[in-house]
Amino acid sequence: VKPTNHKKSSLSSLTHLSPSWEFASKNPNEVIGPLFDQKIEEMTQPQRLSTYRGRNAESGKVGSTLDNGDNEEPKQSWEFRRCHCTSLLKGEEDSTDSTLCQWTMALHSIAVRLSDILNLPNGMIVRNDDGDGCNSDLLRVFRYDPIDPQQPRQDDDENDIALGSSPHTDWGTMTIVWQDGIGGLQMYCHENDQWYPVVPPPSSSNDSKHQLHCFVHVGDFLSLSSPPVMSSCSNNRNGHDAVVVEPLWKSPRHRVVSPTGIKPRYSLVYFLYPRLGMTLRHAQTQMANNGDYFGATIHDDDPLPMNHRSYPSSVLERYSLLHNQSVVLEPFGGETDNDDSILQTRFQEMRHVPFEEVVAQKWAQVQRS
Image (cartoon, rainbow, N blue to C red; front, side, top):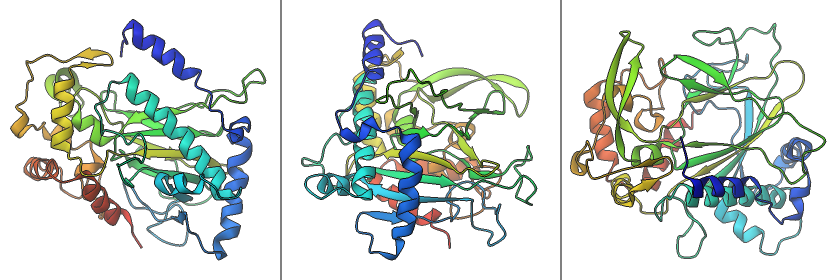
C-alpha cells in the first residue's frame, strides 16, 4: 500500500502516540505474564468484569496437542469487554482487572487513530460509549503453554509443529495485536501458499518505555465491506494466473505456533467490531460512497452491483466468518461448505443481519466443550 503524503504524516504521528496513562511506563513484557498468573490465582473469587476462556479450541481445525482432550489447544485466555472497562476505570481502586482494562483502552485509542488514517466511515468502529451502547469490542489476554519438543502432538498438515491457535481469520473490523518477544504469530500468503512469521521487534535499551509495538490486521467485516477491485493473482490450484474480483483490503489468515522450552508466550489481542445494528450491507454502501481510501481511490466503475455483491468461492472460502466453525474444519474453512452455492447463500443472507447477531452466532459455534 502506498499512502499519500498527508497519510504518511498521519502514520508518523501514530508511531509517536504516547498514552498519558501511568501504566504505560511499564513494559508489557514485564507485567502481562504476572498479571495473567495472578488472574489464574483469583479464579476462586467471583469474576465480575472478566471471563476465563480456558483451553477449548475456538478456531480452525480441532485437534489436541495435549493428552487430555480432542477439543483443547495449549493456551488459556481472559476476556475483557471494553464497555465494562469504561465503568471500572471511572472510580474503582487499582486491581488486576483495572490494569488490564487500561491496556484495553490504550489499544482502543490506537484503533481510533487508525480509523481516521484509513478514512473509515462512522460506525465501522465504536469511538466511545455515548449513545452507541455496549458493542462487541473485547480484549483477550492469551497465555500459550510451552510444548515439550519430545511430546506427541497433533502436527500441522505441512510442518511438524504444534499450534496454539489453528488457522483462521478474525470476524470483526480490525484486530490490534501485541505479542511478547517469544513470537509465534504467523500469516499465510495465498499466492505463495506459505506461512510467514510475524517477528517481534528486537528489544533495545534505547527504546522508550512508552513504546508499544503492535501488529494490526483487517477483520472479515472490514474486508468484505471494502470496495471490490479487479486483481490479477496466481492460482496455486491449477498453476494459472487469473483475474478475480476481490475486496480492496484482505483479511489475513493467521495462526499461532506454540512455544517450545520452558517459557510461555503472552499476547494481548484487541478485537474491534462495528456499532450495534450495523449490517454488512450498510457498511458496504458507506464504504462505496466514501471514495478515497488509504492507498487507493475507488471510482464509480464498481465491478459488482451493490444489490447483489458477491465474490468467487475461491475468495469467499478464505473467510472464517462465512464458515460453520462448530465442526472440524478441513483444510481450513469448513467440512464441505466451500461449495460455491453454500458460501454465496450464506454471504448474501449475512449482509442483511445486524453484525452483533452474526458475532453471537459465531461465538456459539466456537464454544466447544
